[in-house]
Image (cartoon, rainbow, N blue to C red; front, side):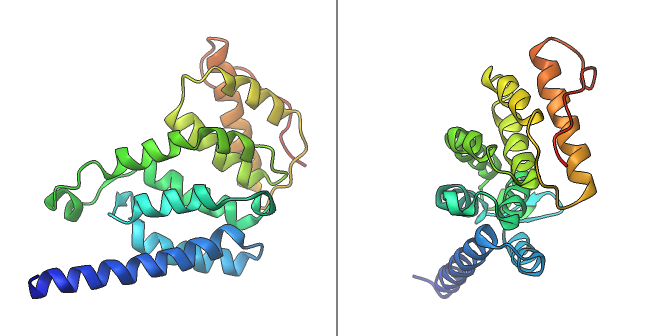
Length: 197
């Protein structure tokens, strides 16, 4: 093994260790400061300004596979799903393209699609940020899923806690888009009940 290969392997191992630590902290965090610190550390490793890096797939897999019922109403889970959304809506960084890793975003989208049932379960959260993140991912990777309109209708009838004012409007806009698409309506023509308090 060449010196450069050893260095790259060591760096990959350190990145994986850090990513695992930060992912666990983010998914389980309830405090804003912890969430922001973990989110920013993860972003620096997996996606920056829409440019996705190699460890992104490991983060998406770890994030979605480790969520338990105890995490369902954690603020950090909403942040984690937001990072996953940034990844699946991104594009491979030029460094990844140069290394031949052009399919990193597709790989991440495939992982999200594999966890679609778990994401549907996450929409049962009382936390609007978590529900918004789960629905955004479902709508992004499985837009033709006929069950999404039913799911959106159910979500629109529940009272959810909202950590930020923008979550309510974002969630209501997404619910309108999903429900409208099911009825052949253009985006935003049907307004569901207020999702949130």
